[in-house]
Image 1 (tube, each protein chain N blue to C red):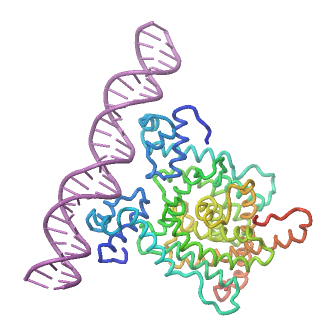
Image 2 (image 1 turned 180 degrees about the vertical axis):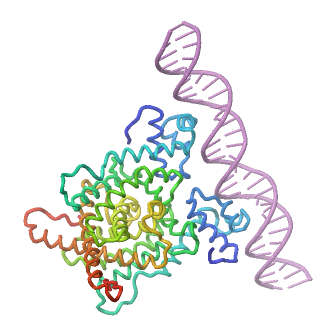
Image 3 (image 1 turned 135 degrees about the vertical axis):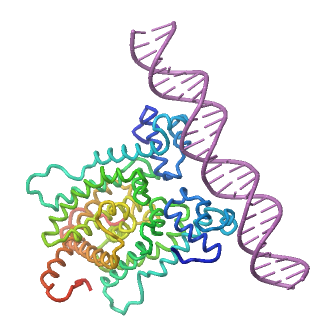
Amino acid sequence: MEAKKTSTRGKILDAAGEIFAREGFSGATVREICDLAGTNIASVNYHFGGKVGLYRELCHSLFSTIFDQFPVTRDFPKGTSPEDRLAFFVEGLLNRLLEQQAGEGIPKKSQLLARELAAPSPVMDSLVDEFVRPTAGVLFEIIRQILGPRASERDISHCLLSLVGQCFYYGMARPIFTRLNFLDLNEPGIVEELARHVTRFSLGGMAGIRRNLENTVAAKACSGGKGIG
Amino acid sequence: MEAKKTSTRGKILDAAGEIFAREGFSGATVREICDLAGTNIASVNYHFGGKVGLYRELCHSLFSTIFDQFPVTRDFPKGTSPEDRLAFFVEGLLNRLLEQQAGEGIPKKSQLLARELAAPSPVMDSLVDEFVRPTAGVLFEIIRQILGPRASERDISHCLLSLVGQCFYYGMARPIFTRLNFLDLNEPGIVEELARHVTRFSLGGMAGIRRNLENTVAAKACSGGKGIG
DNA sequence: AAAAATTTAAAACATTTGTTTGAAACTGTC
DNA sequence: GACAGTTTCAAACAAATGTTTTAAATTTTT
């Protein structure tokens, strides 16, 4: 099921990942976690100082593990196109969010991230600072290059959110589109397929935005054009 | 703050919307809800049969209200282009998800939807059947037309999720990109702006997909297309 | 106005919750 | 092998939770 930690601490962390992902912070109980971990009820308080301490440490350990495992950038050869960097970024991000696990119906730990997103706990602030902000910065620069010099920061932000949104949705909305029979995320190779799609879709999207920028700039003298009627 | 219902039932529903959105189902307590509603603790059980009964009724009332208020399709004139239908759909969907409310830092009720998405409760099954599936069906057909006859169901699904993902992300990830100073969803007219962006971005994305389809079809003699199985 | 039904209210109930306690078991060191 | 430090364990604790109860108040019906 997991990394099969042998220490009590590790066993608790593993179990906590599963329970917190399935039940949420409030819904999870330390008894349930200790049950699954096969440890005593007092162990959580002994090793983590309490429920929130466990949750905090779990989140950090989870994030840093996943972020280390799947980078979104690397030392590209000089002159690598922003499109190629984007493709690499998307695959990394999707891997982080989908994080294939062995289990079948087992709620993935990325659901824990999804929960944090939908219902931010105090833990989130440090997570955003430590993990999300740097990642977003990388993507921001890539998109800036793709959109070209006419793009405002707002344009870049929009496109960034469009791209990240697609990736997150695959990670978060599994319960929904599983019910709708749209996609089975358990197929092998699905992450790469989705990465290709998201990259292609987003490049097309940004091409559309860029085209629009050039048009509106060209004809901006008079009317603030919508261009999309 | 709300519709200011005067009946006890209404007051409870209003308060429940606020508390459940802020605390989640497990985190919310009936005492807190009744406190805010100014009713007796027993009233939840009397009127709704219990906490889950209240939650279920709240979700249904919330969804049907919002879905009625913001349609995603209408009687278009014969021959309306799928692109125009898409633009209308996107604006409707974004309105549903962003659902501007007066309050400032007040957790929006769309957060409740976001929570359901990230952490589906038993309530979700009926919600998906009643509300989500029909909506998805509409979008599916629009996208099918835009992508053209070469698109497989899987292609359509991918694009559908790409589009819906963008919209959902705006609704769900507010806590994150607020922290990142990417976007302020409280600006007036922001929904229309985002709708324009998402529409343009997605049309560009689908154009890219379509282009790719035509290319690969042209040279598909050997490698087998996957379809949707 | 009387009676019946509905709604509200305060208190109590049985569970469950996170946490603490204090002793037992274990680990490594001299 | 004894000892100090660490870890585990069963039990208990106080607080909080959803729910029930029983009676009073209110509304509706006759």
